[in-house]
Length: 539
Image 1 (cartoon, rainbow, N blue to C red):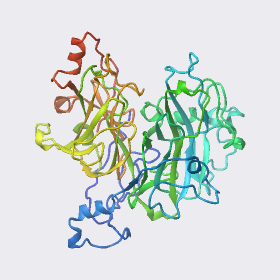
Image 2: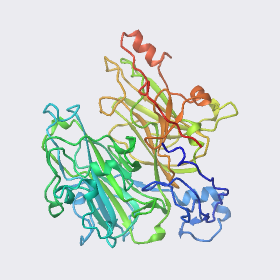
Image 3: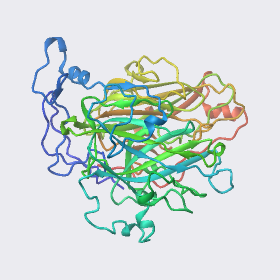
């Protein structure tokens, strides 16, 4: 486990409107986590004015409080996009013109870098193709690197250590050479309507999952390098993909992006973004995971879903690394099924103080996206600071995010419109985050479990924030533990965390969901981590 890796020397001073640049000892991991080795610095907060990045200036009286002035300057620009074929195809390295974009105010020098599938959906109606005919999860590995850099150090047999098959060596692990390395915007490219979600996982150089997903089928090789772009990957038996960042031991440590239905493109705040390279904070080895819903309804359809990274040549465009942080129930493990026939069922889940106290610095959250399924009607996330007992007083919870981003704890959730919305709040070490998901099960006649299928349910909130930290998951894992970090990192569910920050499900009449299901004669579920040996983080 990573308990010893997470030992850190906390930042002693965070100076508003000044560069913070002494060396910081932090956990070392690949791709986009805050994990610089000795001598690598991270500028946590710096003077960011409306006229540029890193300017030495002082806020005027009209600009008010310095901290709020910085946050205002870092407010994101978020727009809706509608994808068409002209926009989805073309625009890679060497293109004479860049593809169209729905992102307003995209810099004129931005160049598109596409990390995308070319994939024929197998016939999942054939028995044994997938565990469930209606659900297909496919993964594909990519190596993204500057075009001026040989990512293999001149080794022409660079894949030999990943299998040694001379035919397989030239296939899969698709190279994506880029002209610019500074990512200032991201735009999803769902290729078909039934793409339920996409994750872009960030993996280490020795990742077992990255090596495995150089091919997408068990019974067929992906197209060779000379065929890329014209011949899709095609086979009958898809290679099973456990979402890498949620799979312990995978060598993947978080997501650079998550797409959900109806999502918009995002232009990051000035000075905030991601970077492609081989440093500990950089994007390099990526796995694109695509979840197809109702896959059995479109056998042999060709899909080119993916994620478009908009990059610019200016290094000062990325001063702070953007992070993705998922809370509540990140992988649909909640144990109590939703009772049928109820107009209002509420499930509260927590990212507890026992996890957030490990934050190395504040999370400055600038965008949020909600994820649930068809019965969800309202999703609200609140932040609270515990008192001396470890509890957050009822009047101390601050509603910061709901489905429309207004922070007013009102609004309507729509499964077809799950987009990033602008927010502006800070999560401090030791805070608790409570996410309340409200469902309508009045049309159901059997309990609804939590799970990956659209016919199941979920309760999840995804944040964009800066500066990036190692923790990308925080929330429910089971009766013994909370997720805290990556897929192999846990904190125990005990003490005040268990007493005040444990999940709870109830119907409008006040009964717990388990009691209501039992009353209706339905069996109950065990906690998903029952009898599981778990190693917890230590400091």
